[in-house]
Image 1 (cartoon, helix red, strand yellow):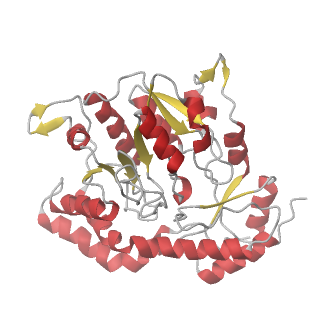
Image 2 (cartoon, rainbow, N blue to C red; image 1 turned 45 degrees about the vertical axis):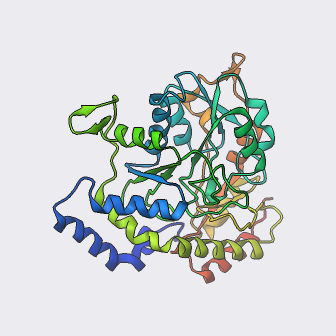
Image 3 (cartoon, rainbow, N blue to C red; image 1 turned 120 degrees about the vertical axis):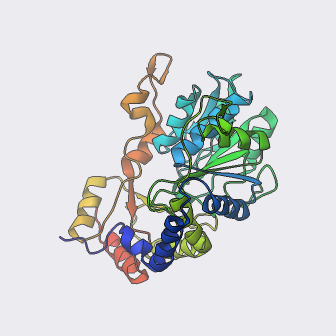
Length: 379
């Protein structure tokens, strides 16, 4: 059957902003300033205003944001190659790639089966003398922050690096380390992604770093610009990870709509949670701090479920079918010489399915999709 309810159509997502986006791009083209400049500065100021973090640096993408944070900590002496970073095992691989790229060791921790976020009750299990940081991932748009994580970091002198690629604008019920409540300012530093599919997406790759640490901010800004703090003066062996001003201008248009976009996703999620009553389909919790970058359900017979969706014209996706420790590039991550086994992570990966939850899904579409899901029989 043809897809009647598409999973995602970026044209429809961006349609409400087309005139503003066209003007923003034209403004950059006419300015003659194509690296850095006022659009990037305005973007960084807007991100600081949104999160409450005092420092923001626009960068090339979400992976680079995390890479630059970790490399920055090494350059300012807060970490050293071989140090360990606790990271949830069920995250998108970019979180782990950033750690290993910096010469640090990712310590894969099990998530909570109910929230899909890092299980903070298990953190002590992963602590060693080489642990230097925890990287909570606000997976699918749900805040990963609580009093246990906050206390664990403080008591052990650990940095908290948020992977905030999926939860812009989400608010935690527990204050962060510096008194703020919005993701991106809960810990010591945070990496953002503005990939086109995100709640607030660019029209290409884009990312950002926020931090409370002036030293780290200076190091990240230099590292992103060939390691240079001024022209032809290279403090570090850096990269070219600058944010394009056209993407900054696009994001400056969209930043005014963060609350609106998140509210729409919550409304669709509310229809799903209230309307799906199929006991064979496990639903995410509907909590205030969830901004629903993805609406992920879990089913034991995924092949049958996705076939049912296909037969009824419902688009779907899987986030993520293969966790990092199952990837060939991380086959070396072994425990006592044996492959790493993470049963909660593997169960979530084997049963997850994402339903449509963007601006191209109307509220009436969501009700019809809920009814289609209710018609699924796993047998």
